[in-house]
Image (tube, rainbow, N blue to C red; front, side, top):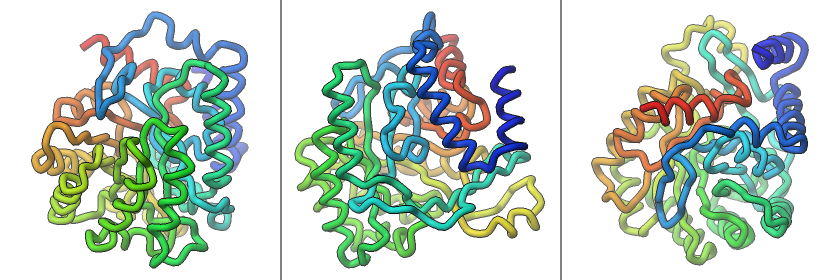
Amino acid sequence: MLYRIFFNLAFSRFKPESAHHLGIFLIKVLGLTGIARLIRVGVRTKPVEAFGLRFEGPFGMAAGFDKDAVVVKELGDLGFSHVEVGTVTRHAQEGNPKPRLFRLKKDLALINRMGFNNQGADAVAARLAKLRASGEPLPIVGVNIGKSKITPLEEAATDYAYSAAKLAPVADYLAVNVSSPNTSGLRSLQAIDQLEPLLVAVLTASGNKPVFVKIAPDLTDEDLVAVAKLAIKLSLAGVIATNTTISRDHLKTDMDVVAKIGAGGLSGPVLRTRSLEALAILRENLPPEIAIISVGGVFTSADVKERLDLGASLVQGYTGFVYEGPLWARKIMRGLAAN
């Protein structure tokens, strides 16, 4: 109820990106006061073993929320078994011009064209190193890496490899993001002939850390199968499916409003169907030892359980946190424990 009051206030008084920064601040306060840890009291989930790591539960925070690794511990305290920070690029960058984050309340959805705004690989690596040196208990930390805007596409592999080398020592796993619609030309790197050398460069730079590739929901079924074959060939730890979509189909929001917002990646329950389809196709074409992290349209514990039953190793969410608030992970954990 208190979050609903804050939520309505934020909608009416703050622009979405300003509300996001306010939310980050409040999460820090919850951590500093110890309230975040209290939220988890009495709630337990079954641990998950995946790609050589032990997770306290199957549900984590997707990339995009904590871009610069500033509330990793606090999100863990709120109940997320893992936090995927980023997207982090080699070079610090401002991202796209504002406004660049929009809410579609009727659809419980978001549209973003943030453009990988972040402080850069060096700064994020230093922050994570300091966090680990503190000795504080942390969730599993994934780092999602992307191409810097100033880097030409033909030099993308070198750009990703730099970030991988910097961040692998302080990450539990790396996720290669070639599927955001908000960096010009990035999605072309999902083509197998471009994706393979890029992933090889990241694997070489990351040492023995697990490496994932994060893909778009807008790939064809044939493309999904091709990605699965490449994951097998390169012995990737797994695939993250899926990122946001450029589609605007099946929305309840008036299409004139959607058109006025313009370009960007759409997230929320509208992604559920395609995300589940992608999960099923990938699981059919990947051996059990190659993990799938399912993301897109996850709001409830039933959503998480459905994906686990379909063969996902882990499940992530982000948009649901915006609409449901800081107790969201707790609600999902309680729902999973009850089943």
